[in-house]
Image 1 (tube, rainbow, N blue to C red):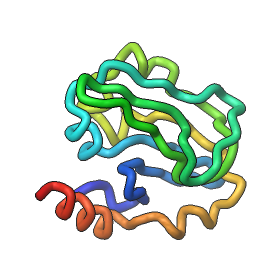
Image 2 (cartoon, rainbow, N blue to C red):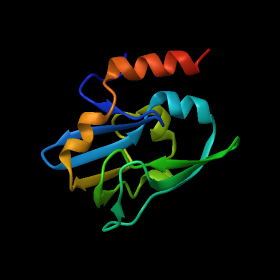
Image 3 (cartoon, helix red, strand yellow):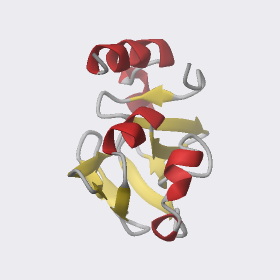
Image 4 (cartoon, rainbow, N blue to C red):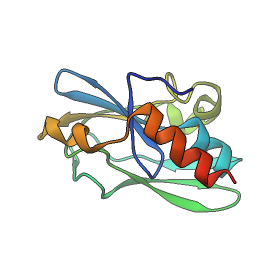
Length: 128
């Protein structure tokens, strides 16, 4: 079971909310589906993001995929060391593998995201 204190998107991002700041990452399932990740492009600090819109890009030997913002706001912090340590995405997707921190403009964005249980159902459906 994935962490119950997080919320999830159907595009396999997770979000951890602390006050008005949201830490965003991609799930273990997304990492497993991508397999060998070779490159990640993250937004710059100060970038405005809109819920559901592309926030960056992740590239594996199989494909290039967009990373989507699970909430609207301004990028407050970027995990600068991640592009040089992509193994953190697979070794600690819900911890050290975080991508960005967003200062949310609309904290209620989180209410429409999936709970851990609902996300599990999506993963089960996609895994077959």
